[in-house]
Amino acid sequence: MTGTHSGKAFYAGLLEALTGVMGSAKGYLNDHGPRVAMLATQLGSELGLNQQQRSELVFGAVLSDMGMVGLAEDAWENPVAELSDEVRARVRQHPQRSEMRAREVPHLESLGPLIRHHHEWWDGSGYPDGFGGEDIPLGAQILRLADTVTALGAPRPQREALGREKILDIVESGIGVEFSPTVANTYLRLMRTGEIPQFTDAAYRHTVLRATEHLLPEEVSPPSTNQLLTIVANLIDAKDPYTGGHSRRVALLAVSVADQLGLEGHIKSALWSVGYLHDLGKLAVPLRVLAKEGKLTDEEFEFIKAHPTDGAEILEGIPTLRHLTTGVRYHHERWDGGGYPEGLSGDRIPLVAQIMAVCDAYDAMTSKRAYRNSVASTSALEEVARERGKQFGPVAADGFLAIPSDIFEGLHGSRPEAFRDIPQRVQTLRHIDPRWFTSEPVHRP
Picture 1 (cartoon, rainbow, N blue to C red):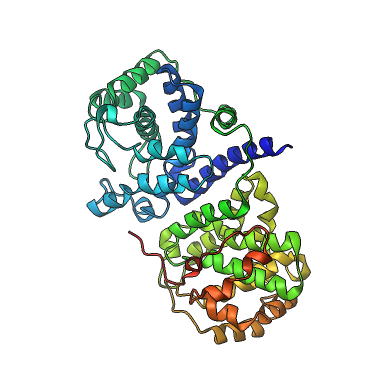
Picture 2: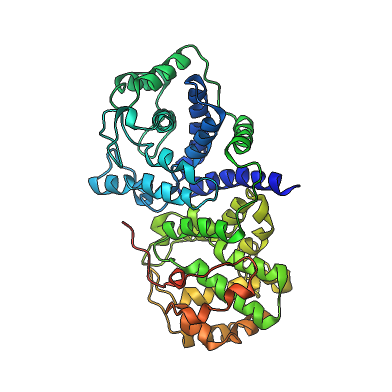
């Protein structure tokens, strides 16, 4: 596969993967973005948008809700008929957050205005900027209607899905208020003449592939591994308020273990990447479980036990990262066979996962969590030594215990000197910002 084709295939896979990520973080979004994309592109075609503009709608539809991750999971888990003012204020932040996330993805920076303004209303009462009328980009006008009718036609935690006639009534009453008259009347005509086809996964995938052909440059390579890792790690950190920097610290520790064991090349790059991604499946864990201060019930612990498998399945949707699924899937296995998800033991556990297990456990012990305070580094290292050959593989534990003390000392103190030589040690890494490693919890807005 040429660089150009692999790059475009990567972007198609990225959209599918992000759809999976957002769907796992907030289940009702599982296919919301793709459905919005299909309706929006049909409306765009009817309204005379060219292929480039319709391609922007496809990507914009999926990326426009990225900023919702970490904003209102508590409200979705405890549904009420009406959101409180405080929750609404949080939700209103998501267009700017989505815009910021999209601007992190190379070649998609131009989608910023489309994403930012997809909740503006025709009468100027929307958010975030209070744009109205023709000041709202046409693509955002289209997304506003497609987003609303798609949401109305699907069940939500607080209500059942609405029927066709009720949706048509809502659109008609929203003309000139929420919706552009031109966009709304186009939708009503297509609905009444039966010209809007049923959504299918196959049609969506074909539309995504066509969109990549028209939206991306002729010569495009996949983003660097580190760029993608940053995008996904930011989503993970947004969901769990107590893991800010955790993934990046685990990555740093894993590379340090590799140094002690003399591991080079692909395995070191894999360790860095899996460090970032090992908790990807936590996006599927309810916030009430992640943030619970007391002991988990058996039912709640089942959510935790599922996160390695959930994370591995999400990675399957990104062709360039599929090789990392093993490390993600098995990072909670124990040397003595008492771990999860499969109860592997001994050398049946892949070495990458053995290293992840000890690095993850150390950082969890030395970081504050909702249910306990952190412990001192010396105490955590003693625990690693005690669990050598029980929880942790002997080789992985020995490599971990041999890490130079300055790495441990700088890990939670954000000391740049502790990280200075890492870029030379991992080919996929171009820059380390010491602020990434802060141990302070990320406070929810």
